Image (cartoon, rainbow, N blue to C red; front, side, top):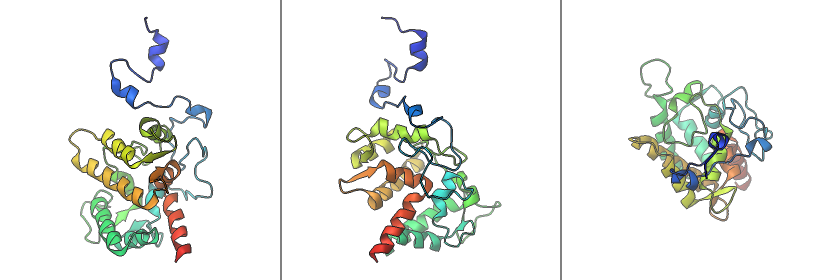
Length: 235
């Protein structure tokens, strides 16, 4: 049976590309919020939160900047290693883990986000330029300017959420990082795996899954705020 031009134009799977069947994408997103394909500069919407995170303040920052701003302890637009360490401790990491992860974050992202041409031995991460730290082999939920693409966020679950519609198991999270890998990008692939492994450790639910809400909160930084509040209550 012949396929019409209209069917070809709107198809989300291709008969000769099995991977398009294995990793389906949603075609109903406009039923939940307008223009899911349009990059949002300051909000991180999904099908359950069409306007983004309630009570979360964008403060004029891009979604990617919001993701990092939690660690800016004095709100000066710069994140130093000791601030990263403090933020990681606030969300529940132990002393050793927070020190290692905090230092690694600033080592990796200080130079790409620098102001000027020379590196800074204090390893500051400049929030203004944090979009320059975006790496390949990621989900594509941030664009190259740090905006948030709702369609790519939703596709993480349509492609890899085979057990639950609104969460990923550890294996599915691994499959996602494998599927996102681009050729010859060892560093980006490693960073993607390490980043999601950390999020899984601090935010997995009682079923050992990473919820859609936790993952969305990661992108706009609201997850860090919630974890810090929860940890403060238990102190």
